[in-house]
Length: 139
Image (cartoon, rainbow, N blue to C red; front, side):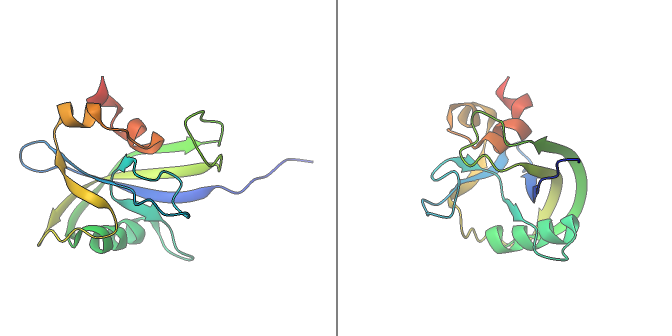
């Protein structure tokens, strides 16, 4: 018999400003958050019957106040839950979009949300997912 397992699907937004800086923020220190106080990019888990594109638009609005002008699939990463840096061991599939935004920046949910350059990002304690999606900046 084949072995099947559940995978947690979620989306991540790669939002870059005109200076080439990336929007990041710290995860809050809450019991239900797997990476408290680590730096991450906006995003979140899909709700039931929600398409990934719908989810990223909703999450960006909720976390940043921005409206989405354009979405472009950046990359997909499947973590089988064996990543040694993963604190929760839950297999996940992360869908990362490059996103062009407009509107007023009104950060919510994440702490210290701001645009950061490559040098700053290299010094931050990133979530394993952010490390994966920003690996080109970290090299």
